[in-house]
Length: 434
Image 1 (cartoon, rainbow, N blue to C red):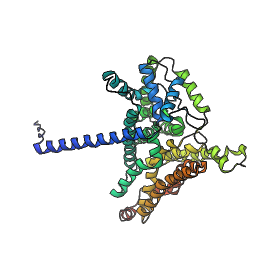
Image 2 (image 1 turned 60 degrees about the vertical axis):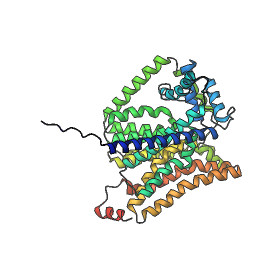
Image 3 (image 1 turned 120 degrees about the vertical axis):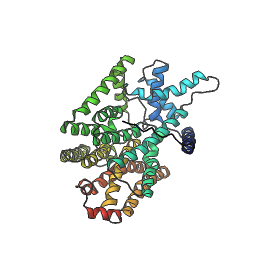
Image 4 (image 1 turned 180 degrees about the vertical axis):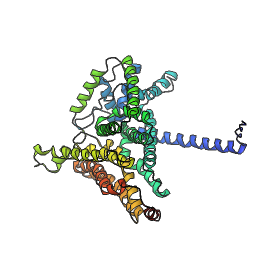
């Protein structure tokens, strides 16, 4: 059997690839520089500083990362002072078996300082800028993955606008500046759904391990995915989950055998802190005369609704599964768990489900989708501006409620069209002419 040799690249092709690589390096360098400049000029970043400082203290000072000094240092970096009662105290709540993901960023500053002590000063804002650049890539990756999941190829203008929405919405900007791992969690959740859709079960199980970063964001999502996998008897997902979890736990106990109790104490301290938003607290601020004994109605009602949708999705196709998973993420901030505005960025993929249904099922779909796009982009920024001008908690509460309610109502508004069987040929022709 005769094998053909792969043709060599021509000088013109080599020149073109070199030019592309050179331009890519220039663009990446400029973006990194912009992010570092933004990190230096804009405060915040406590969501990144907390695990980063914990990793540094453990690696270079051999201090327990859940030590109170780590939280105090993170507050100093984020607020330039100790946190007040209404601010996040930034207690480290990342389990130690996931903390090594921050080790490369801990090595960046300290290694350079060790190599060039007279020229380099440890600057946390530089590392934060690199983290922001990574998270911007994660936002674009999330947008790309959700479009692959629902198999939608919108018009180029709307495609570009959708990617820009992922970066420049209020909730994305807030998450980028805070540096919390929630943006990476959004990419992770879509990665889990994509791995399950493409039957890469071991990969999906391994990615589920990383969902332990923030329970208040993805607890219900984790439970739903595990329940769905169990119902479909896809045991390879559990094998992938168990193998990676076993490896990470063994490595964590070898590095720091006594991390569990300090970790639980840090989580308990964080739970007692009075910061963030809860649906019951917002309800009381809107209606002070509301009977406190009735606060259970909202979370119980939403959980019953979610339970019905989970049951209805049994044995259904991947579109129904994706829709229910996005609904689960939208319901989570409203069930009474304390959350922050930055955590709402994980709702961004659900917008694609709403947009695609409006575009493909209805006449003048792109016009309606454009109107919804402007609403979800401009309204939160308007609430923020009014909260700053009037110093009003009311508009901050609207910021908290807007994204989950918009997503929840939008998903139900388009539910029947999104999860129904594939469109007929006539519907496809109408959609192409929209």
